[in-house]
Image (cartoon, rainbow, N blue to C red; front, side):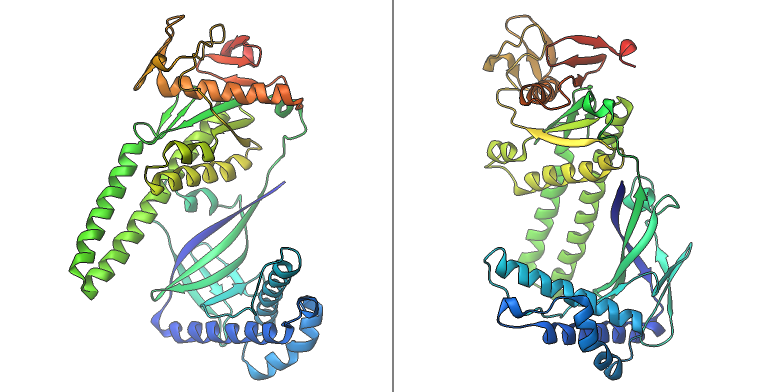
Length: 408
């Protein structure tokens, strides 16, 4: 099974090459627009989006008018053909409105014939000679997407070159072949890691007792950013506006890196416990639970789950979600399951019936993971004998506990 990731890399481009790259952006845009203009028709059934037909109709004209080499002309044609096809599908299949594609941004699509990756730099085809640009790698590479995916294990493929605020960025698709465990006995009868997400305290708590991240820290950083942005907006100067953009970019990078680190730790927890599935609280339920809370918190939960999904895919681990009704009030001890709102008091959970004492988030994590296992059992899924991963072992849908020593 092929796993694909997209990595953004900042490039150090010599000022002498800026003009050449900027002209390449413009000619690539013109080429794509020429193809889009030719393929467009107000009658959606008459829109031409077949690459071979568009190539025959437009290739010679583009080559005569522009300085783009053959491979870049074909990339521009492919970009336009995809855009035309998307418009056609929206109108015909989805019944939506769509207008002719207009290419206005700065982008060039590179393939194996127009880009060459080296250890510390990249070589790009342009309207003139090739341009060489060095990679600007993160100062602290540890735990970043660059460190994880910019390795020999991942094959570098197609890339798009962009320019934002005078800086050039390369978005590279990297691919790795991984073994899929979806048909083996381990996956069909696997172990579930449950993850409970929180708006304060620990950001994520697992059924195995791992307490990861700090929601308070995340929210504090957000509040600090909002306070600074508000003060700068009141200033209203051009310098203040530029500073707002700068601190916004810094905060976005910090948030993305923070969620990346937590998601990496979650997947590692699943791997170390031989889990074949990770269960999250249903995101719709989270939105309802914090409907009066910050949209940022909702975004953070959504991004964290997205990060976990694509990282887990590399290990053949499924990611699912369930509706956690009363899981914060229910005793997770398999022989009890007593549910009462007074069982939980803040971070403390103490069952009024059996006396079981746990961290409340840990208790909730155990409950929802167990609920997913029971869901698989009731639905007749092939993973009906799956188990929930706990600190000291696993428990199946019938409540039978197996200590870690006997699990392997």
